[in-house]
Image (cartoon, rainbow, N blue to C red):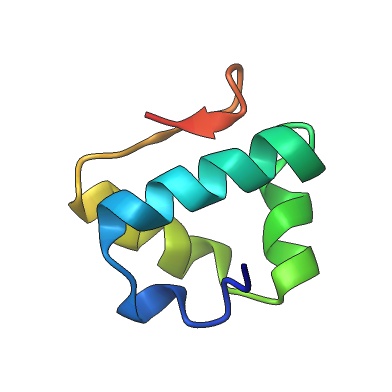
Length: 63
């Protein structure tokens, strides 16, 4: 799934997709994910933060 339209996605579904991509393709590295999909890291984090999710670098996922 392409994350280019992440701003229009349901935040709960977005978190699930991002965590799956982080786990399966990017070894928990958020910088690699945002670079690969050419999306703004701050915008992604802001959208997920507003839904109550924070990125935990030690876990490599949003919770």
